[in-house]
Length: 278
Ligand code: GLU
Image 1 (cartoon, rainbow, N blue to C red):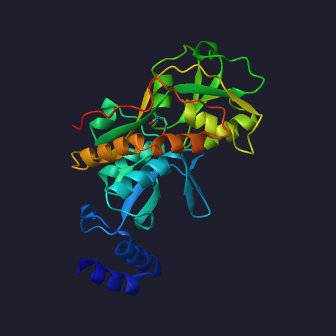
Image 2: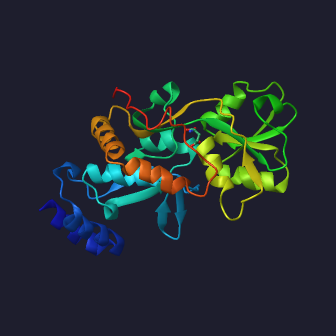
């Protein structure tokens, strides 16, 4: 009944909403979706291989894990509303109820846990450096006197501030793609964030051959599913991720989304075991 009423209201309000409401009737075979017709999922829009938006299409490993989990929670693909969640806005967007779940290379940290909760992890990456192909930078120890780009609100920028080199000039941008553009322009010597993000950026047609990932990681980034603090969804999300790992879809997704990138995931850490829900 509720769905029918919603569909009628939506038809009057907006064609797009009508479409998703119709999808809800035909595609939902689970009672777990409750009374919500759509689920709002936060992803990155400009991280190739992880979360990437192009012409209304959303692709990447984060997107694939999100779709799998959403499906297990009772939401078909046509019930997902994809929302861009830049690094610096993730906690806020959960706190302000602008998204229901975030799959956006979102590291689980104690500081973030003061504001949000996490399910997962569904992947473990490591912080690394992206440099020009002819660069002789081989790790953080070579960064003194250099200009390094990272993203505001990321653990990557925080780690630089905490001191990975004594004399490094940190430039912060809203996203990693903007850091890469700055490096192309010559004003930046290196970009730092998680290895899998850097590998994806280096592998695009526009960037191929210009940059290399150093391959010398100096952190462990456990990608969690960001949810509202105290949310009761954590156990169900963890069960969904475990199912994705067990049935082979996780491995298929990671392979598909890193194909063509110079990246091999750390098989000692991946696929990860779930943390206990708080
Ligand atoms: N995983 C790190 C973080 O959550 C870096 C990547 C990102 O900014 O999304 O901050």
